Length: 262
Image (cartoon, rainbow, N blue to C red; front, side, top):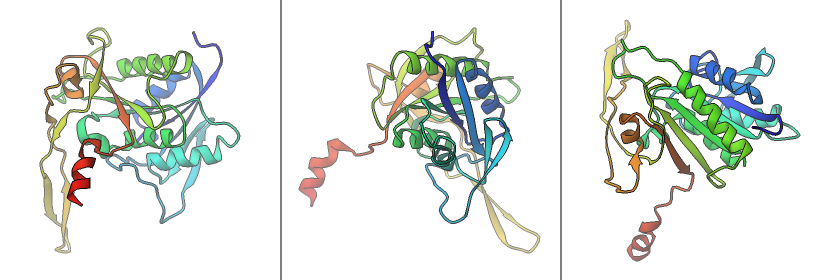
């Protein structure tokens, strides 16, 4: 049971009208005063980018609900803390619920994860949450389980403790099963994502070539860690995957190699 009314800031990378964002907003209002600042347009795979070459504008949709025209998830967090939380920071930042997985090295592309990254850079506990989609588009899904998980994790962080330290965040992925079918939670590491180079070439009416970057299949492998599952393995087995992410990307086990090399 939460002992006080907390403040939660929400963003996403699917845009301010996304179903996952609305589901998250409605669920977290049960435990906190929630403010939404989300991109006007979809910003998937925007990474941890800030907009430096043009001005940005807040558009008030309704009370405590804004779109940032036309910002990235990191812009949304950065500017929300400047404009809306002038005197006191939110207690928690939640980025999502993303439509699609953010596992393995996809976290380096993800605008969803970047929203949480910006939060922890600003000294605020932050989580990113994504709904893995069924392999078949004919299988229905909703954000009921994902929003329940978000509520549970947010409540734990706010009322008990945050299991990670400064400049670390939780990256959460939800299996494509119902709330009655998932098997619980697993602490996971980021698995190895397999990438292709899918891009389609087309010619426009003026004879100029243009490209659409394709969406690669969700193929992966694990690191044979006997103690923990990868995020991919946990999802495949029907568990909610919770991966602690650190913003320090230094390969410490290579420092001695570099020292000798130079």
